[in-house]
Amino acid sequence: MFDDSDPRKALTSMSKERRFSGPFCGPEVGNFSQEPPQQAGDGWQAWMIRCTNLVVRLVRLEGTVTFTRTGQMDEYMVFSTDADLRFDIETAMGTVTDHPGDHLFVVPPGDSSVTVRGTGQVSFLYTTRSADLVAQCANPEIPANPNIPPFQQWPDPVGGFRLRAYDLDVPEQDGRFGRIFRCTTMIVNVLPRFTAPRDTSKVSPHYHASFEQISLTLEGDFEHFLRWPWTSDMADWLPDMHIRCASPSVAVLPPPAIHTTLWTSETTQIVDIFSPPRMDFSKKDGWVLNAADYPLAQTEIE
Image (cartoon, rainbow, N blue to C red; front, side, top):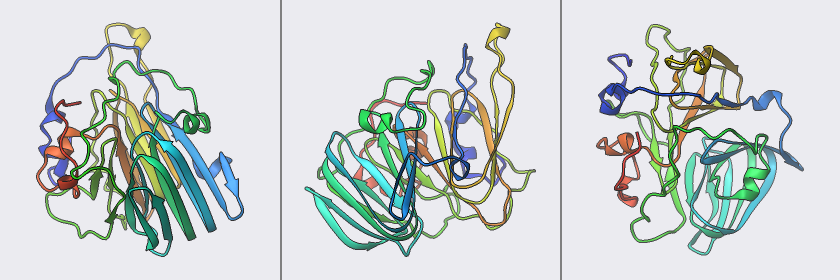
């Protein structure tokens, strides 16, 4: 299902033949450039959408914005590919002051405050354990997907929880897929910025048996294609879908739909997000750039 040049071709889990039973769930889509924000303030707007295990908040700002969490029960991530943004993050387990963008931050549980200054975009990722954040989403209620097992958090980080900052200025490397970071609750792949439309002779149709893929587009135009399995019960069958998205946007690609994505403009930036972390990515030597900080789980989700 992958072109020979695609590093994911080596992922053994993709080659397993599976049988699925319906009914199946459709995607969740947030085409933020064409929808009103869920939150707004002086010089900033924020869009929020949820899937089964995650809440995504995408913020566009020209000025300063602060988001706080009190008694946060688990880790969350904050990241931006805009190098000129500046971050002040305060937690009981570490702080950063006037920190540049083009970084990914893992914020520990407990109380925290994230202040962002400048012009650009910043993304916040939380688990749906935070019911107050779920309630703020454009889609607070979604159908339960029977193919997704109950959420299981991965082991605590080496040396305990603390604020961590990871540079996104990472050179590409043959055989490695993107720029992947994980924590106890999720895994994020900040793909390189593409400077030409995708070659339609080298697309990557594939499926996930038991987890969602959250595709967050930050720059450019994208098209998502989805196709569901046929079962013996035609009542389960769903029509193929073709979703066009400008940026920013989120498309939640559900299991077990076969899916692939085109980028159709000259310059594009997309981020793939999964919760909990993906074991297949995590087992590939050198793929997860902060693997030394976070032990592997003992159970595997396909």
